[in-house]
Length: 186
Image (cartoon, rainbow, N blue to C red; front, side, top):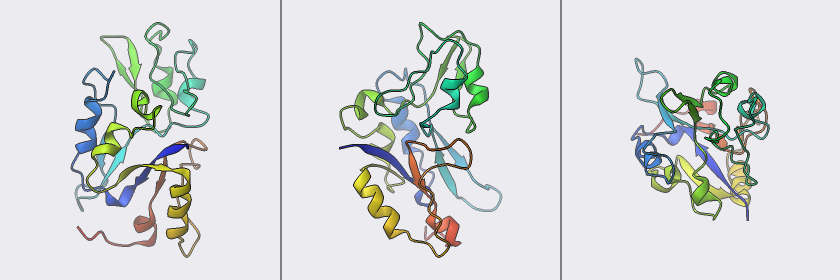
């Protein structure tokens, strides 16, 4: 049964538990691979988690001349392979979301790999396993379909991926409260 990372953007309270958990994932060398952004810090406290969306046809992998960025059979786009990465940084420039980061000391790109050591076995990624507000959820595609039905909006818009920039993504999200103009209750 295929599972996906699902993000309810308007649930985020900015606690940054996902960031702390990310550094603890196996193979991350204590490096944070996710971000929490303040949407408009001068106006309110709205925050959103930002991580690799694991594009179906990722620009980072397409732009890599050394083919150092591999795509796992699950759809997870992995960090650059140490033995192949030539440090050109094409991937960091190509990503429309600004996700891959470059470590100058190691001459290597790194990014969220969807905790592939966990998710390949059906275990939620670290970020989703600790999120106290269910902003980040590891759900089945059946559960995703139910959520789409639950969030029927007047204008029919429900963000299931980020098609306006890179095309289909393996990480799904929605913005129902933001799209409907609802105010957060916390």
